[in-house]
Image (tube, rainbow, N blue to C red; front, side, top):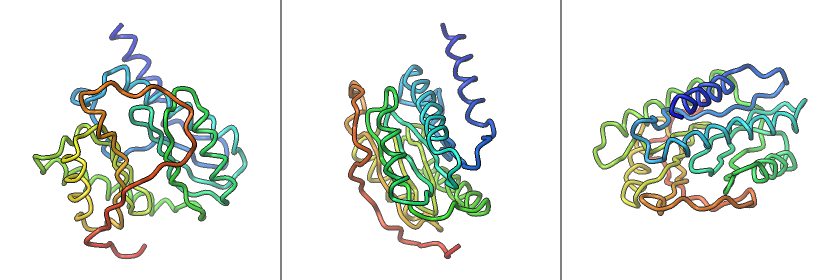
Length: 221
């Protein structure tokens, strides 16, 4: 069974990195994602999240084919985060609705913005910034950094994971102090630590977020 799980996980990861044929970029990206060995999620839940990321990305690609957009899909405990750029409010709403109807998705945070797709340079800068935030977490004992996913989009840091309230607050504070970070958005499942994950439900593509303003804004790109 363990071998089968590893084979499935390898197939899912391979699907994530395959190039898209359509003129839109839809992927599943997390800078410095939690490692399998020390993640608080079960191996099965980690596999479910990877599968959800691929499934939602494929569903968005099929539905929005031909659109000039850039969407990243991330999932933690079946909570889906959409980030990136689309051309209109209607496309944003459509993307959120598609994700919320997808199999096993319990919650969608639709953080897409109305703007032209980001450049390769901007995405590279975001990846670098995410690595810096991860390094800051590693150097902070109060943070269970291997249970936190970091998603970076236009210098905004989105934090996902199963943590305690103290870990959530410390993580947001530490991330906000990394040079270049514009904003920190907490999308944690605080009650998820040591508890049974909530059951899958069809949830509208909106959810409240908590933002911690960065104390050291980065230079405009």
